[in-house]
Length: 124
Image (cartoon, rainbow, N blue to C red; front, top):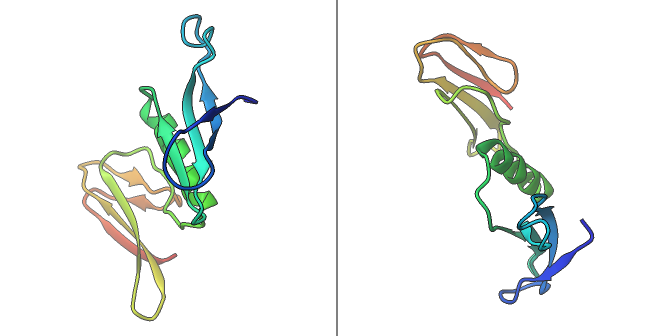
């Protein structure tokens, strides 16, 4: 969207970028913005969510923000029972840990199939 809004406080630029605008006949017709973001002086980013969003939309937004900040992630999988994390050892090696807490097989974001209650540790 082309519209900007003033965030009003905090560090960094006071101008927030409209990320998502309403497209309904009430808030959309009034020109309201549902999600804004702005850069901070320290190189970070502030995202303000002024609406209820579906979980998939929140994950998408968080993934974009983390990627822009250079933060490595595991990705997203479809199972609520599958835990995925990255861990770094004292030598700087990064490992992907996937734990299936469920009673059925699950597929990790990297395509690894985990049996029920299986734990898989691989180099990231």
